[in-house]
Every structure is written in C-alpha cells, then in structure tokens.
Amino acid sequence: MNKIPKIYPEDLEKYSSAISLSDMEIFVFPELLYSLVLANIMSPCLWEWKNHEWFRNLDSMKPYKKIQRLKQFIIEHYEFNLDLDTWGLTTKEEEVKRFAPFMDEKTIGQSNALFGYEGDKHYFSLDIRKHFGLDKYTSNAIPYWKTETLEAMDAFKFKENYRAGAGECVSLSTLYAAALFVVCDIPLEDIFLLATPLHSQNFVAINDGLLTNNRRLVTKNMWFNGTDLTARAQRALRNEQVTIVANNTGYIHTVYPDATISPEHFARFKKSLDAFTTTKITYEILANFLRDRSEFQKCFQIKYVRHGKEQYLPIERAFAYEHGSPYKVSDIATRNKLLEQVDEYDFYAAPIEERIQINKLSDYLKNNPISHFDENSMKGFAEKIDCSGNMDRKISVLEGLVDFIHLDPELPDTEGKQFGAPNSIEIKSGMTREEIIQYLKTLRTTHRIADLAFYSNRDLANTNWVPFLKAAFERNPVVIEETKELADGSLFEAFEALPNESIYDRTRVAQPDEVWNFQRGDGLERAIAFATIWKSRYPETPIELVSKGDKVTLKIGQKEFLFKSSKKLEKEISL
Image 1 (cartoon, rainbow, N blue to C red):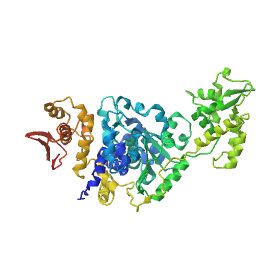
Image 2 (cartoon, one colour; image 1 turned 180 degrees about the vertical axis):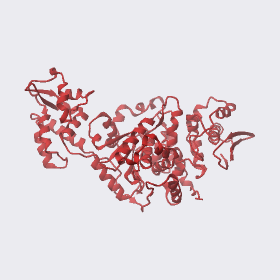
Image 3 (cartoon, rainbow, N blue to C red; image 1 turned 180 degrees about the horizontal axis):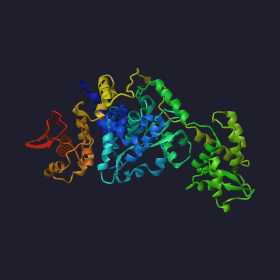
Image 4 (cartoon, one colour; image 1 turned 120 degrees about the vertical axis):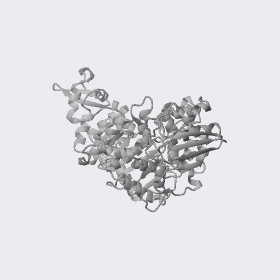
C-alpha cells in the first residue's frame, strides 16, 4: 500500500487550494493547474466516454478527426459558465492576507482583473466590474471563480436552468487536456496548457497546431479567417501576458524564478505556437484581414465586370453581403458569385478616388505570397498599394496587416529562470486507468504535482483530511449564505432531506458548496457541510466527526447527528 506523504505546515495552504482550485489559487500555486488535469485523467467518468456511442470507431480516425469528434461531444454536453453566484464571493483583503506569505499584492494584481490587472484593454473599455456583474457588490468583492472537476461539471445538470454540464474556462481547458489524452490518444507532451489573467486554453502541437478555446477549437486556418468568433478566441493571446505554460514535464510561471518544464519542450512549444500564429500574405489572407479590421475597409474597392463593363464597389458593401451567403470576398473561386448578389445601385461606374483596387493586389499575390520578415517582398507589396499619394493610409494598412499575419504572444521569459532537473510524468497511451493511478501513487513522494493530483481528485482514502476540511470551512460561502435564514434546529432536517447520493465515486468526497449547489450528497459530505455552517455560526464550538462503516456521527456539545454513508471511510477527527 502506498503511504500518504506528509504535508509540512508551509505547504498546507497549497494543498487546501488543490481542493478549492480557484483561479487566484492557481496563479499563486501553478502546480495546481496540471494537478487537475491528472485528477480528470484519474476520473472514471472520463474513461466512460471511451465507450460512448459518440466515439465509436474512433481508433480508425486520424488525430485531427478524433479531436473534432471530441469537440462536438463537449459542445453537446457542456455549457460555459461564469456565474458569480455559483461559488460565492470573497474579499480582496481576505485573499491578499491569505497569499501574503507567497506573493505580494502588486504581483497578485498581475493575475486577476479584480485585483487591479489591466492587460486586456477590451475588458477595461467595458468596465471590468460591470462586465462581470460585480457592480452590484461592494468594490472589494471578488468572486470565487473555482475550477470544477469533471464530476462537478457534470453535476450542473442538477441545477435549475442548466440543460447539461457546465464549467468555466480553466475547467474546460483542463477537461480538454485530459480528454485529448484519454479519449483521443494525443501524447501528453504535445498538450500545453496556457493560463492568462483572464483566460485559460490549450495549444496542441499536432499538424499545424490547434487551440482549444472554452468549448471550441481553433485551427491555423481559422486563426486567420477574420471572423468575430476567431477575434474573441485571439483576444487572450493578443492582449494578455501568458502567466503559466504547463505540460507533463512541468510548468513555467512569469513570477517565479524556478521553472520545472523541460527547456526543450518549452522551446518546441514556442516554435510551434509561433508557426501557428504566423502566415504569409495571400489574397485570401488580405481579404480576411479586411473582414477582421473593418476600419481599413474604407481604403479598398473591388472591380467587377458586369455585362462587359467595369464597375467598382466599396469593399465594405461586399462584406455586408457575406452575411447569410455561402460565398466570401476572400474566396476567389466564389467571389464573383457573391458580387452577383449585390444590388447594382451599390456599384460605381468609375474607380473610387483614394481607394485601393483589391483586384490588382489579388493578381500580384497570386504568384507572390509574402512573408512579413522578407523586407524586399514587403517593399514590393507596398509599392502595389496605390492610395493616391496618401502615405499615412498606406502605412496604417501595412502595419495593421503585419499585425494580423504575425502574433508574438507575451510568454514567460526564460531569461534568469532556473530550470530544474527533468521530472516528467510519463503516462502513455495504452495504459489503463488503474495503471495510471498506481503509477501516480509511486511518484507522490518525489513529484509535488502527482501528489497534489490526489487532493484535486478529492480522494479522502488517499489524502490527508486536513487540507480538505480547511478548504471546506474557509472557502465555501454559498452553503452558509443560502442557509442563513434556517434556524439551528432546522439545519439537520434540511440536509437529511437531500438525496443520499454523491457526485463522486467511492472514497472521493464533495465540498459543502457542491453539496448545496447540486442538492445531493453522501452522508459524510452532508455531515461536513452541516459542520461548516455550524462552525461559521459558532466558531468556538468543538465538533467531533466520527466516520465508521456506513455511519457518520457529528458530536456537537451534548448533541449527536447521525448520517448514513456509503463512502466506508474510517476516521475520527476534531473539527
């Protein structure tokens, strides 16, 4: 039997954070990001997907086709959720005090918009607090945006107004990473998790690369298609500092001087991501650029020959007709079909002054795709942009186009970082779930992330209970708030009335807010939720919890409360 490693006092906050898994905690303790990936890999729910009708004959498919099937499954079964009330609120002061031993307030502010982060100008133009619905709370209120395990994501189907499972961006990215490995057999070393202050997504280094973005996927072709959906998918990498990059070899963090990720893996990641976010200038890319950067459309016109006569159309009118049409301005093969649909009154009989004829650029680019770093090619292309002497307009177009075709994301800087000795988690396709769990157990004394995975997995048979209970008592505000109108004498009846069923299998245990949010829980889970409320009302009251066989007893003063449990955990502990 594998021994549970000892937790030292200075590590208790990190281990309890592996239970609650809020976005703030993951920034301060970056090991937690991959610990949740491993917890999901250990989940029996994920392995059940392999037998789902949706994935029949998956083994005969190529990797990209497998991933497309996975995407459709996730879109069908999960919603994106960022509701402030799901996991309740904390305060800026409370969290700054809590993290003070590990990180100062200014540094924490780099991680979270609600701590003062100002990286993404898009959000701040909207008013960040109003955008997220925080304007109805006091200025120091911070939501517990907790990252859900797969089981908690699935359990949203029990909540009112949810049709299926749900989760926030970190939940979806860690689920994707685990499912890419378990269901699609993508090697873990090809899956890189990227966390920014406002978002989390994955880069998968296969073929030309692809990004997971909440429930959806973004391929290289999609990255440059100029649509609103792609613009939203690009926003994090275009506007924010990437704070954490992680894969099975470790992580690198913007703040901490020590990095555990393999330098070779990180270098490969950067090279692959750079290739993914860079393309050559072709006519299609030029048209996609104008679709995305509509402010430049006023600089262009398109020539069309109707009944043997040349006509000229402001290009913004052509893009307007794309809506609802299968034809695109960017597709030379179907462009004329789109123009056939345009009302003749929209055309001009003569070239429009100070507008560039995109047809001329189309002919030039047909045999001359241009790289942004090829100075001579760019100079030749610039000469083809005829703006009737308007040099400022020409420069603006060129600068915008170069920005469109090449993104240099702000990744963690390797300069000054101390890379540790290799310590990869060598889980391979073909291993069974049981083999993976046993392998991770053998790593626990030497690999912090492997050890933390069992805490993220909520397995009280294989973890110390103290971090779980610390998280339960300190970071579960919903169950306390939602029951504040219940008298002491009615609390037991309220929990006794809940269905005696856990969202977790075997010896894995839900936190109190999960019990209340999903209105169900095993007896042990309901007993801990009950104790959490009692402790919030009467902090000095001693409580004894005794779990034995199928019974869990809470001893509070002279009173005893009995719950039935199927977890079969043996424990006596003072709360």
